[in-house]
Every structure is written in structure tokens, then in C-alpha cells.
Length: 40
Image 1 (cartoon, rainbow, N blue to C red):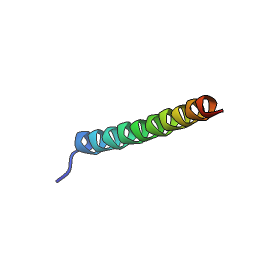
Image 2 (cartoon, rainbow, N blue to C red):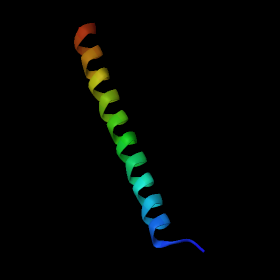
Image 3 (cartoon, rainbow, N blue to C red):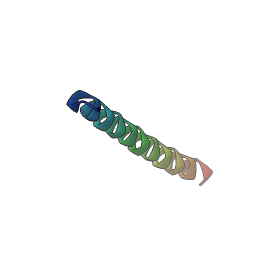
């Protein structure tokens, strides 16, 4: 049987993965903006 703690741990892992993904997207957008600025 799956315990409550295991469910919470899995939810935390998913949340961390989402945060990591959003940070990567943000960093990518910042890098693209900087690149565009340099290319002008």
C-alpha cells in the first residue's frame, strides 16, 4: 500500500520538476533577449 508520506513526496517531486522547467524557460527567454540585443 502507498502511504500518505509517499504521495506527498511524489507531489513534492512533481512540483520541483515544474519549478525547474519554468526556471529553464525563463532563463531561455532571458538569454534570447540578450542575444537579440547583441545582434542589433
